[in-house]
Image (tube, rainbow, N blue to C red; front, side, top):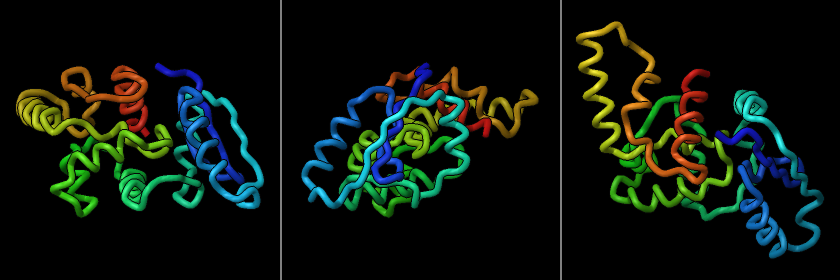
Length: 178
């Protein structure tokens, strides 16, 4: 799993959280297109996963400075407001009032510039959600597992993630524990 995260802030607001400088380069491009007076400061720092988890408990939507289309921003805000559990892309599309736009919503999820704080890692393929429901129903009938879905993570495909599926699994575990 990623142990160091690069946080980029523009004028004291979080613009990206990434495991590499790719988002920083894209942000620099966006800032360069604006008038010089539009930005006072850009700060990049490295933090640990533990610090990222702590930050997630305090951050508010107003603490972000995000660059995206109106549609991307609406999807990212919906992601930010999710209760900590797994969702399918179809469920998220419906929450975004765009049930037919699953692919567009999936693309917006994939372009999320703020890892973990905007929890795109909680979105998994619909087939995985179906399998999780099936496993959960069987487990509730025959075992003591109730409530937490953490035990499901090793048996479902969590889908693609920019930093790999193992990192996505670990981020899901961290998110569902808190």
